[in-house]
Image: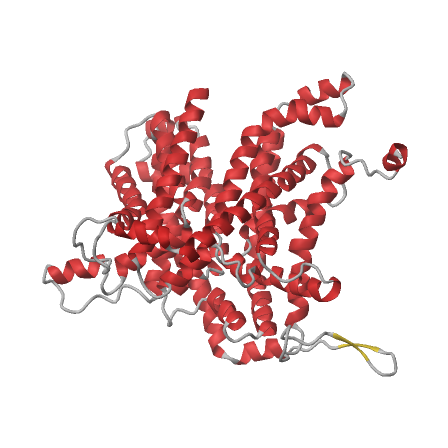
Length: 306
Length: 265
């Protein structure tokens, strides 16, 4: 029995199985689902469960017909609401990424330059919010920004304003929420690169008469660029598809695509449209994801070489 | 390199940390407010903690979330470790590049797409082979495992790459079987990575709203789903109390972890 098992490579410690098990899992639960989304995005809407028609059909003559229709895509193309949702998503994600970079870069730089004992604490403080509930961190901002929120209550009590500032249910609140929630994702990769820099280079530049700004642009910035790229992509890619933040802070006027897909799926129950919207979003994100993947591979190769 | 921080950097750091922590602080302070109106302070009270503990739907969803997170994290650690070993130790096998991309892709994929695609998979599978029957805790666990194994793979992969390979080679040369090499040499060395990978996976699963909403079925609402449906319509002090409990638990956990790591050094 044992020898047969060994012949069949059914020994679960053989390299084959070590790779095949996780690979098989990812094929079944990650790759194939996408192909299904792609398939359903080409199928007709139908009432019933599931709410889409099959792509293939046997005719009475025994012929297999494959019906690919582009109705869902042309429908999306003709309704400007979807176009605005995509544009909004990309703009908001971009603004959020820039905001994270502006706050995150000096913070990461400050952490990298702190003494080792302080550095551990400062890093821990950046990671800590990440471990608490994402949903509740967004929720905290409702209390701060809403018309009856802390900021408006404070200003009204001080007699500075009589009607509350429109701080919530707009693009501003959504971008703020994205910066707040994704800041750790920007700081950590930036820190990883800023920490590795040999700061003697900076001293040398100063000795040679460089001004601080010049030294920064010519030395620190280029050396930290991989961190900037990694951090920006780690913020930008998930932010494009964000649902929770625009739903809770963006109000009805902020239509990010993640929210639109959610509504088409859960409220309007038009699965083929939701699938087609997801496919288009993925097309937008293919390039950033590919860059991120390449960066990841380089990182690992660097680790391998060590 | 220990220059003094410039005033500019110091200001940004203070501002940055205030930005990260002030919102959390307001959550905690107002969980002790006696008024139902969350934004006006009316005196100290712990009544919201009492109502929280009496909320049956919330407690039930907490149990579901803990169940899902425990099994998803455990499965993710097993699968992620196997994936990391394949990627770091098996050289350049056929399809390695593709496998590498597949292992990290779930990490950056927008949750809406992952959730939607997994639901369509489960619906399709049920139609064709009748499995999985309906959706609920089981399907959420499968979905979370897929998401979390990406993170575990990255954590374990880093640790394996740092590890001195000559130890394994020596053991193999001395005639140890691969499984023995794994349990006696690799496992103890990568154990800290497995632990932090497990905790990370556990936290991610406990936190996920979007993917769970897609693949959940009737009666399997997770904690984030219950929180979401109650905060959608504004602020309730009870949720502040819950947030305070979660933050305290996490902070204590992180402090213990930090203390353990410090002691080890």
